[in-house]
Image (cartoon, rainbow, N blue to C red):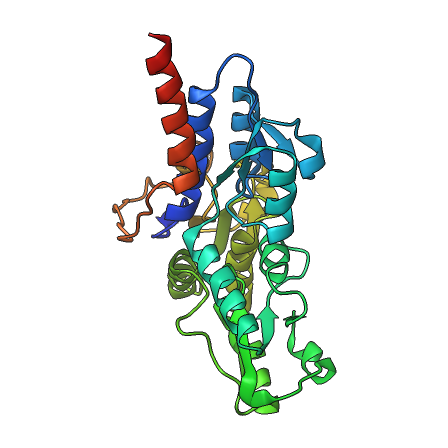
Length: 322
């Protein structure tokens, strides 16, 4: 069996920094402190379980966090209401929102202040969309598919803009955007593409190779939007594709008659899970160990001010105690 590795794959810059924030905050805690994380820090079961084992407490409501405790906001972003609730409870907020999600939030606020209507393309139950919608609920309508377009209530299409969830399928987004442009020829696009570089790069890599293999295996969790999109891209060219959390979910029936398999991973999936899957294929299916090329996407983010402030407060206390 020939095994191909898709590049790029796995952790993006936003996921990497969000996980580092939780790990480093756990390291800095005082004995009387716990660390709470609002929603899963990233949508990956293995990442969440590892951090939970380290002591992170994941919650779905700010009300679950005791007064005065630190709370990390997940990489998907939160609404202003969540931030307000955290302040009211005198919590110590640490914002791990991906900067590319923060960009979409800022666009929503800016257009809403100008009195424009905003069409937010995305999945309405996804945490990122919930957070962005919360920035300007009176100005935003959510569009999940072209079928939603005829039901939109538009006052002035000259003051109309669309924004997108950062982890959408490029193809699905284009279908919706084209439907919007056909219905509202004067609609405005965002100043720059909202679908993030990592989503785009991983999707293009799979699209380039999926038609040349017998099977595509995507490492990622089923609540990961970008991971699900990778399987859909393979299906679009009639190549069987499966999303698995890890090698334990591999079904031997999928591999019957397979000569070539492409392995990739969503932006929140650890590389060790890919390596374990490849090792299993080599050992149990006479797989040929693949060549792997380091792929630098040239993107890195600085730690957020809220994290730096928290760490600085710990260093100050330590200095006073000495």
